[in-house]
Length: 168
Length: 136
Image 1 (cartoon, each protein chain N blue to C red):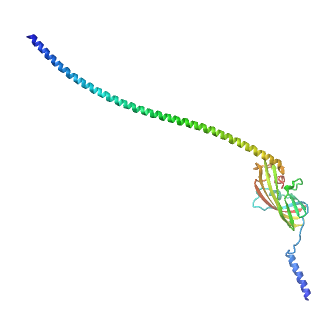
Image 2 (cartoon, each protein chain N blue to C red; image 1 turned 180 degrees about the horizontal axis):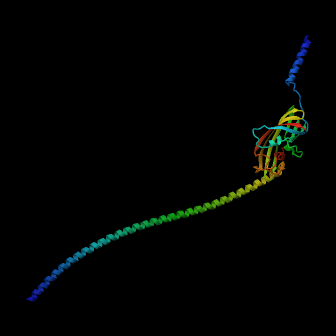
């Protein structure tokens, strides 16, 4: 083996090692706009004060996601009529869903209680049109008496859920 | 002669009688003086007792008057307090009613401005329904 062959072999070996270590970045996956099925939901906070984890462990649970450039908008109720300020967004950076912009909105339950909700979503893209997300939210009384009749186990409350998504 | 003897005897008898009467009168005067002294002493004692009783009566009357005044003052104070309490309670109730009214108005406005309006959730609603109602 002459010197040139030895250098070429060493270079190929180094590239192979760096690639295996992910130092060349590995694969970058993409998300596309659509409806995503939720699975494997678990509690990411110590307790589920708000009591909605059951909605995310439901096999029928889906969420909507809109991708616009590097911005992903989460429509957690998959409700086309949902007001835009109720939808949290985040920035896609490689396979990371980061820099969350929280949704800050109010929900009136009947005529005697108004709650204010703050929520955000972060996570990772684990494959094309698939990912792992963490939803964090808090609920507080905005006005009136919210001791009963709301969607939540208690108000005020905070909860955080982790779940996987796959496009339908 | 007999007449002379009789007159002499009578005169002697009269002299004797006069002396006895004087002695009796002296005794009577002495007894009267003693009785007068006793009466004066008894009157003085009675006057002193009356004076003491009158003093006690005045003290009791003064005490009664003081007690009556204290009772009247206490009654007036209680009446005044009740009136003041009533006024304060009325004011507090009015304030509470005004606060409740204001709170209800604020809640009504907040409901009207809410980003999402939904029904009061019943216990029968499923978690999925509750989540959907709140945008989850």
